Every structure is written in C-alpha cells, then in structure tokens.
Image 1 (cartoon, rainbow over the protein chains, first blue to last red):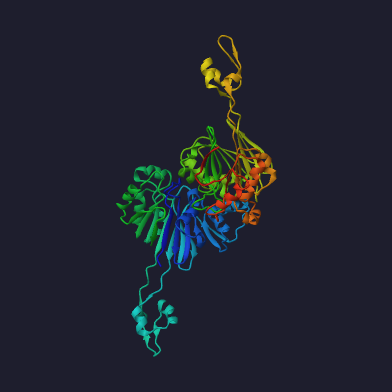
Image 2: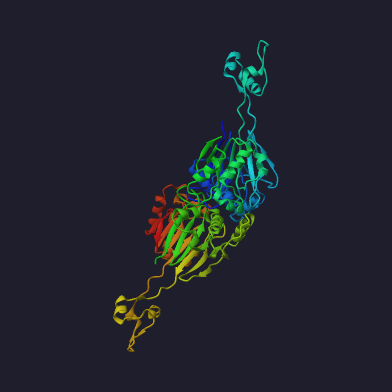
Amino acid sequence: MPIRLVILGSGSATPTLLRNPSAQWLRIQDTDMLIDCGEGTQLQMQRYQLRMNKLKAIFISHLHGDHYLGLPGLISSMHLTGRTAPLQLFGPDPLIEILKNQFEVSETRLNFRLDFTPIRANAASFLGNFKHFTAQSFPIRHRIPCTGFLFREKHHLLNIRKEALKAYRIPIPFLQGIREGNDYLTESGETIPNQLLTLPPNHPVSYAYCSDTAPDDTYIPFIKDVDCLYHEATFTTNLLSRARETFHSTGAEAAEIAKKAGAGRLLIGHFSSRYGEVDQLLQEAIEIFPKTEAVYDGMELNL
Amino acid sequence: MPIRLVILGSGSATPTLLRNPSAQWLRIQDTDMLIDCGEGTQLQMQRYQLRMNKLKAIFISHLHGDHYLGLPGLISSMHLTGRTAPLQLFGPDPLIEILKNQFEVSETRLNFRLDFTPIRANAASFLGNFKHFTAQSFPIRHRIPCTGFLFREKHHLLNIRKEALKAYRIPIPFLQGIREGNDYLTESGETIPNQLLTLPPNHPVSYAYCSDTAPDDTYIPFIKDVDCLYHEATFTTNLLSRARETFHSTGAEAAEIAKKAGAGRLLIGHFSSRYGEVDQLLQEAIEIFPKTEAVYDGMELNL
C-alpha cells in the first residue's frame, strides 16, 4: 500500500479562499497522521472526506498560528463526536500548556487520552517506532524554534514468487517465515533456498516535511536521499530579501535543497497569499530540480 | 443609515461546510464590529467581502472554542496586513492571557494597540459610549460564564422639513442646532419655532445578542422591547433534555424569550450540526413568535 498524502492547506500565514494555512494528512499503511494544523483544518478534512477520528498522531512543526491554530478546535470536535481512542501529539513544549489552558477556560475534560511528546528544536529527535514506519524530527531554521519531520517506512518483507507458491504448494503458515528470509523444508525433506521462493521486497518509502525554514545545509543530512521532500517555497526569487527577513525560502532555494539532498521528488507549498497563480514559483524550482510539483488544497498523492 | 448585520457563522460547536461557528459582523453608522469569532471567521469575512481592518471593536461572549478560536488568527492577519489602528476587545478576563500567550510563543509584537476590557459575567456592565450607540453586556445562563450584548443607537437628531429649508432659506451652519431642537431666528428678527422646521427623529434601533444560553427570565429585563433579538436555538423541542444538559435553548424557548421581551423581531441560530435543514426548528419558533427568521452563513440584514 503506497504512502498517501493529502494537502489540506498550501498557503502561508494569511489564509485565502483558495489556500488554507498549513496542514497535511499522511497515511502510511494503516496509520493516519496529520502534519501541522492551521486554522480551518477540521473543515478541510470534511471538504476532502477525511474522518478526523481516524487520526492516530498529530505532528506540529512550530508555534506560528498558521501551523497550529486549528488544533484546539479539531481536538474539541474529536471530543464532541465521541472519540475515545488515544491521540498522540508531537510538538514544541509550550503547545500542551496552550491547549490545557483552553480546555480549562472552556471546562472541557477530554473523553480520550492526549499523549503529548515535546519535541526538542535544537537537535534531531527520534519520535516514534510505529508498526510500519519510524518518525523523527530535526531542526530547521526559522524565526522561532521549528522542526522538520522525516517519516521512513520500515523494510518491507520479501515478496513471494507466485509460481513458487504453486510449484511447492507451500502451506499458508509458512509464508510469513519465508517472507522474512527463511528457506522452505518440504514434506519430503527437501530444502528449497529462499531465493527460489521470493522476489526482492518493495522499496521502503520515505517522506520529509520542511516548513517553515530558510534554506540551510545543516538539515540536508536528515533528508538525504528521501523519496519525497515537501519544502516550503513562500516567495519567488525577486523577493529574496523578504525571504531572508522572514526566514523563508524561495522556489529556487527549495529546489537547491532537493538537489543537494538527492531527493526523488519535490513538493513545494506554503505560498505567500500575494500569489494567485504560482507558475513563476514552480518554474524557478523546475529549472533547478525538474521533478518539482506545486501543491494545492485538496491535492492527493501516492508516494 | 440602518444597522447592518451579516451572519458569518450560524452553527454551533462542531462546524460544518454549511455552517461556520458563531460570528456576526455588526455595522452601526460608521462603526464596524464583530460579535464572537469562531474558527474560520477571517475566511468568512473574505467570502462575504468584509474587510477585517475596518473593525473597530470585537465582543466575545464566552470562552467556548466555537465563539473565540478564530480570534488569534484574525488578530495575527490584521497584524500581517499592516494594521496600525487600535482595536477594542471586550471579553472574559482569561481571554487576554490566552492571546498574550500565543503572541509570546510566536514572538509576535502587534503593530497596533489591542485595548482589552474584561467583561464581568455575574452582572450587567456598561461597555462603551460610542459616537452613535452604546454597548452593554448582561449575564446569560450557560455552562461557563457567558454574557449577552445589547447595542442601542443613541437618540437621532430631529429631521429637517424640506419645505421649511426652502421657505426660510436657512443657512447651513444653523441646521445642526435646529436638528438638536433650537428655534430659528431669521435675519428680520422673526423667531420660527422648531416644530415648524422639523419632523420627529428616526427611531433609534437596538440589537441584542444572546448566545449561548438556557432560557431564563433573569435576562429579559436587559432585552426588553429590543428591536431585533438574536437568540440561540441549538435544538428542536424533542431534544429538550439535551438542551437542559448542555445549557442551550430550543427553537420554541427562543421564541418564548422573544415574546416575553416584546422584541420586534427574532433571529435564531447556533444550530446543532445534526440539523441539515432547520425548518422544524424555525417552525416551532414561528408558532410562538411569528416574526422569527433562521439565520444562515452569509445572511445580510438591515435592522
């Protein structure tokens, strides 16, 4: 099953009717996650028919409003719609106090457990060993503490050759072991070596999320050879000085990062509200890194 | 100039694609105000072409998320779009700390002055003497401290009779005094009594906002004879017990309040997300108080 990504918000700090602030729905195997949660994210989920109570974990990159102000409302709606399953939340340390404060003034006692893990912003952190993937964070360079995220599928099991299944009539209980690399001992005592029974495993896919950040070589080791890189590209190059002032990137800079990292493909987003169309932004990135796509609200990708 | 009201959110705690959470834009003469500010309100303003930086004052009734979670994002967008004019904010005491906390973690220093006035929830309060109207709050009965608001136009000046203007050739500098009730002394020394020069002033309009609340006689004196009453009507009567549990009102109860208060007209809103259509809710209100309308997102009214 491929990794599925749905863009819920492709805009930056000032939302528009076309571009909501940052939020992405990421599904790896059977685990649904949310990365960032700008204002209005819960309505975007309704718009794109994603059920909020399927979410197992939420990752917040930093505490600028356009990356987390939708969180209190989302959690409140989960509560009001009867959620009981625990929710994992990863984010900067002050986040949990902000939420608790809001639950306190509204006298809300959640029906479910909110398991908060604070993220260090000054060093890379291993965030979790999920069933089918791992998640980690790493520092990126913004005006306030901010982290990128890397999701990496675990190595897949070997694939069984269909013709071997037929030829050796392998009973089902043996399949898991063979997929893990075992040879097969037939009823007549013959050992069939694993390489006759299997094909190489599928490639484990990795996805990195870098928003918001000025371009910086320091985080390239964390996203090295990633299959898909999402990198913010708030401005076009003619607004480079504005990008430097605000610790953001241009389209060209995002592409340079993808190139240096050897990424498989690049998604750019977090576009300034001054851009109605982002053709120019995309063009300057493609000139440097051809496999670039500009994201839009509602975009669905299989990675 | 009539009072203008635009409904930005007509839903309750769980937003839907049809009904945003509570927010209303109120214009009295040249003063634009916002009452409550649920998540997504700034986008609703864009949708209905209302310019956020025209707002002079914001009134927040209580600290349930669906009434204020859009405020940090709205204020941040005002800041990012270069607002310098002061903004008056009225709301429960903890609101300012919540906002300050969010500005602090995002390292935001507003370009404009935010003048906060805490509202007492246990007694009526006079909130402000604006140029053309007054604003006051009064306690209503919800699960957490909550207030209603009353906006009352000041007495209008007398209207000048057009035929008198012509007959006596009254110079413009005298008009203000005559509208305030003065007689007019002609150049030949004749005194023209005011009643020959003027017609009665326009009726000063009043508007009351009551959301969220269980119905209660205690707040009727504050909304007595109001021209237009907005009263929440979250549930139909068949969910009366749910209304009692959650300190909300039914359509019928909102109508009873309007009837007891002798309101000129009634607007109902804050509908539970379980209602796609609100015909039944409206019907049960109209049976008790015929001049009832159900609000919807984007509805514009002249009061």
